[in-house]
Length: 103
Image (cartoon, rainbow, N blue to C red; front, side):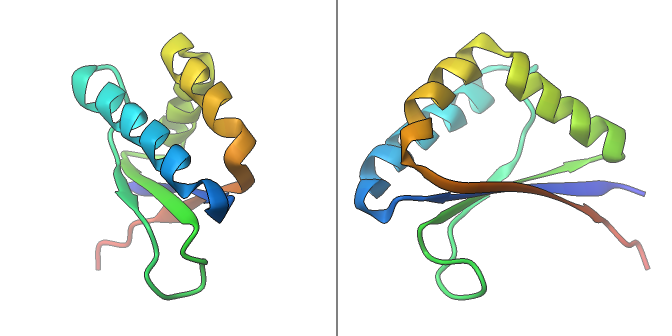
């Protein structure tokens, strides 16, 4: 059974432009590097999460593979450099895992 991992990042809305500019740099890394975990980015229009939220969502074969992606992010120097620039804009971050039900 595959797993979807969601990284939900709430940012300071006063710095949306700066936050999203850095997120575009993350997307560029993801597109250019074959070793980088791939995902989709979403921003709520309406729903439970406020509009100043960015959701990165990726599908993995299992929970272990999803956790390895998190480890990859933590250990990659390019990711860490961008994360350090983006960190001042964060208000909250959480990671969720979902079982993808093939019914």
